[in-house]
Amino acid sequence: MIKTEEAYQYALKRMNEDVQIIKDQRTHFEKLGLTEEQVTKALQPSFAFHNQLKEEIASYEKTLNQKE
Image (cartoon, rainbow, N blue to C red; front, side, top):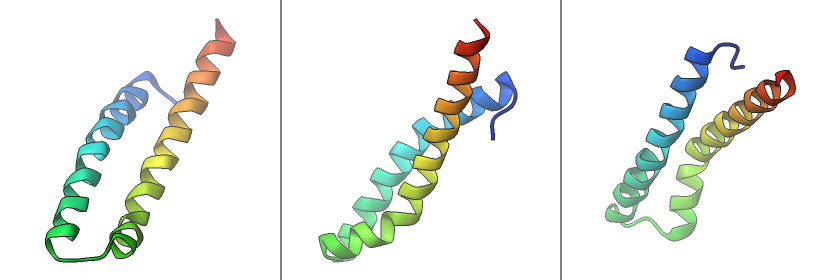
């Protein structure tokens, strides 16, 4: 859970980095010859972490908007 502006900024940075990491992982798995189904399955943990981070960011932003 994001509780500070510093943590929020880090989460935003991390979320943007995750997009590139997931793209790189996809390329790596494809080069290994995995099928699309296998690639998708292999990326599920990365997608889950990324989605959790997006939810935490949205929750923090909602909290900020309520304070205004």
